[in-house]
Length: 114
Image 1 (cartoon, one colour):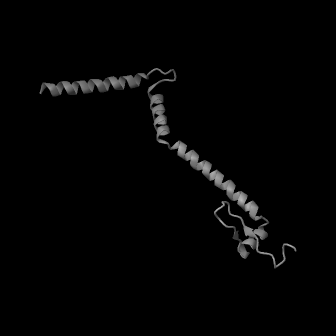
Image 2 (cartoon, one colour; image 1 turned 45 degrees about the vertical axis):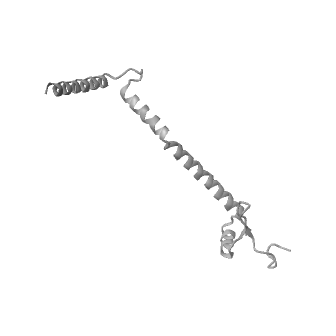
């Protein structure tokens, strides 16, 4: 018996998983596969590789957008803006904090006088 024998059943596309039954390929799908020169196994490998890449991308996005990571990155960003490379506070930041403290102090003093 050859593979072109009409008595043989049509080639079947294997679907992973024990709970699923193999699904026969439609004749036009099999013809397209034959025309392009790719086997069903090659297509399955391509799909599996794409699925793995997609899963890796989703995992990376989940890690990037985790709340703890966002907080950590935010704190690091603020710290980088208010300190020098040595870790010392920037003078302009200290001046702004001192100015804000003076304004709040004046407002509180004025409110108590009334």
